[in-house]
Picture 1 (tube, helix red, strand yellow):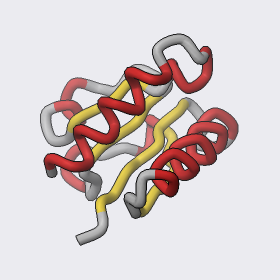
Picture 2 (tube, rainbow, N blue to C red):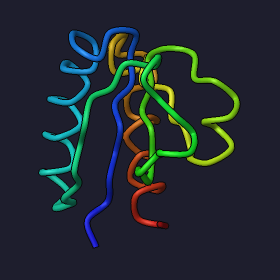
Picture 3 (cartoon, rainbow, N blue to C red):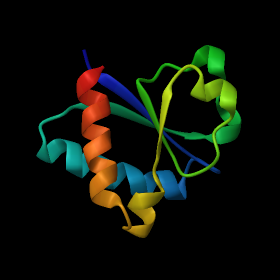
Length: 96
């Protein structure tokens, strides 16, 4: 079964597009296939989350965190902690 990942930022466009490219390249290199969709934080609804994981560059409301694991995507923007981010991403996608 293919995993689903939401990329969430303030507008659902610029930052999440940058994250998408980095995540897709990394997962392709590791032979992991996922469905990635980009979202604005304002459009998230805890009752309609259909993702195995959220990678976010903004604050995610607590009710969303109750239904899906949220991974901080800021290391992909700054480059600080990027390796740790990718290790955690792999772990989370492989355990589900």
